[in-house]
Image 1 (cartoon, rainbow, N blue to C red):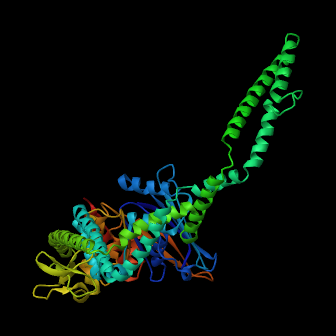
Image 2 (cartoon, rainbow, N blue to C red):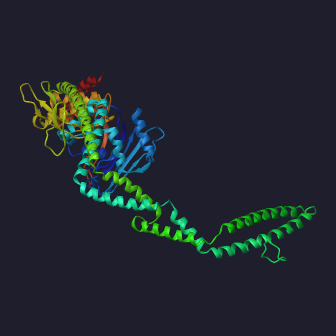
Image 3 (cartoon, rainbow, N blue to C red):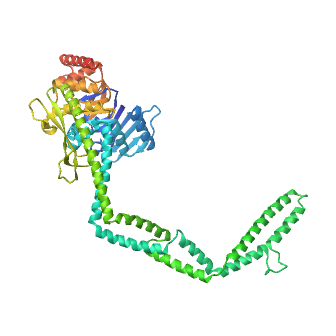
Length: 585
């Protein structure tokens, strides 16, 4: 849950801290006091879009900080992601988050003690908090959102089936698009393929080998300078080992080292240091002997071969012809040939390949249609359960005669998308299947079944949204739920029922509610009041926890605008007593 929220420099809020608890947290206050800034701050903390216009001129930046404490598998998943990104939870397992927005619009985020992209806050927010407000009600009116809501309700097995459909749909569309492209651009593909084959034929005839150009260059240099190399090697060999052409009285390096070693060894008994030096001279003599042997081998192999040199010239000319056309060096030419072979398979527009692709497209189309049919059946089964459960909740929200229907119908053909026969009916199909989902409301017996956007008033839509959230709560979801005035347009008994439902949600979730209704606020486990201060030159707001008598006075203000009225306070205390009794399990 979210244990604490601190907001600085945002809207009318100068600096305030909200101590939150598990269960139901209610936020109330006069209109314009800044209740909405609390929800705005939550949105910023969890990666929402920053609006520089809401930042106070002094101190010139808005800061929202929060402390999360998670448990179970959700904690493991979130903590692992944070650690992978370079952050770390606190020693007590809690997680610190912060978001800063300046008046210039610059935004920074911190998570787990490290600077992070704002998207990381959003990634965490998707898993731990769900915000519901008037905009969310409008979102629920969109058909795609209604289908997504039903898919979430249907459960993990349905999600696996939907993932399989999306994967199969992607493979099918890839084959269909590939086949269409090969047929549409057959002439251009054939021309490109001919050029590829000519290049491959030329490279195959030359058959370049990796690194061959460098090896040939080095060999050519040796052959071109064979006489100079031979003279240098012979002179060096004579110096270290002597030879027939050296003067008899000129000692070689090997002989001189031998003489020096023996001289020192003769005195080693007098001074051991000379014996050590004699040993090192012996090592030097061995090394010189090795060099002498290698020079002999080098001289034996060195040969000025004009015929071989001519072959090398011709081979290098053939390689240069390839590098002028295809790459900077021989290795690049070989890589071009590999790419060309791969490209040739892509350019293939032969009748045999086209027939093979056509058969594969037909097979995949059948697989997609079969999976779409199973997804549709699963949605219809889930729609029945979903409608029944939401209808039950509506009855408890003072809409006893209302009923929710969830229509799962085939998508019409003719849009800018393919079509397939699914469950015996031709329908348009996409990666999410061949269904359109629509939530319909029967407000009372005899009333027509109308889409939510046409059949629900503002108050009814608020209650439908809450009923849906209560049903979703039984299927898991984020541990923290935020409701921003979803009770707008509701009053009387319906308001009490909304409070009761929110309190029931709070048994399994942390619930934050911004409300104007005392009937809802009475059910809170913690009551926070946003109070506006106009005493200074600038209007500011702060948040405080109210309990006991203060809480009754706040409810009296909400009931009648008279916080000091004895009658209003008595009514508020009665409301609190009823709510306390209702909250007991």
